[in-house]
Image 1 (tube, rainbow, N blue to C red):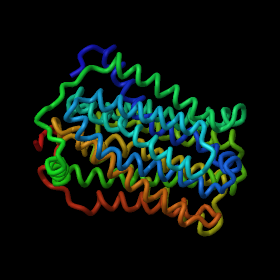
Image 2 (cartoon, rainbow, N blue to C red):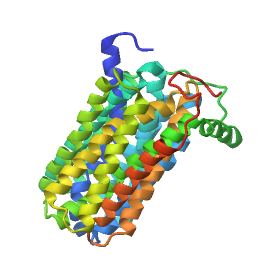
Image 3 (cartoon, rainbow, N blue to C red):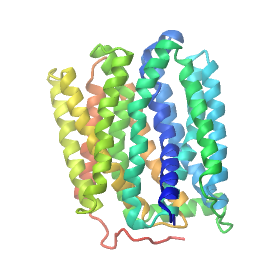
Image 4 (tube, one colour):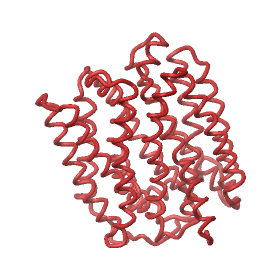
Length: 404
């Protein structure tokens, strides 16, 4: 466990940056969808598939990194992932076709997900179970900066230099994070008892999945997060084509909406002093379901104005600031030695559902705001119902166990 305050701050900062690689890679190029489509002579709907491929890469790649992080320690597999990310980002700088961009975004995601898996596992490595929800809330402060800074920076980069330079920026960022991993993060001991043969790996994953606390909170949290991914996939078209925002305006609106998520993620730390993670998750999901339902009703009645959708999405995302840290902590708390595998499964479940939501937004595209809004509402309602009606095992708690 981390002892000094300065060391703890640096560790949390690095874990936050590792967690933010994926979100930054998503958010920064969203304002460029229109410019990318024009430059590559295709449609925005086609460019949306590069976001879907990124979600698929993150979801699938985490299964690979989980056992590797448990077997070889955290740093070596993490650095390999960052090298893959850097290579794919450089490729995106020079790409000249939409299909090539879609493919390279898949490879980029396979690299970035190493940071996401490793950061969650290292929270479990360095901090006791009673602090994990608070640490995840602190990570959300770093992660949450990306939706505020990324689209705004991306909008200015596109206007000044063009969309290719977004990937120049991401390449430099990944190089700096790699240096931080090498010089700041503590070394972790490899576990030679972890086998990399397919049958033991699958057996380990099955043990994690059989834990009811993990299964319920990972699915509930993943379903709620999918509303966010539906928003990410659909918002460039909705905001810029339907409501007429330009790249800069979209970046600022995106930043405003993300501010709600950051604020509540930090408020969550204070709430945990009086309320349990279970209670906070349930009530936040209830409010999110209400916001999603109102948004859908107004969209169906053709009454959803620009200010109305901004207010309701702000409320929707603000709830996610409570849901993510608490459901993640509750899902991972039963594990210690197998934290890498549990973290990988958690991420895979969440991103798989998110990829489905993103694909559905693209498939249902009808040049209105209804596909995005309806999928956001459905995700929030379903997630709330999971916690409301599925009975939890009485042995569930927030103390650490180990299934290995």
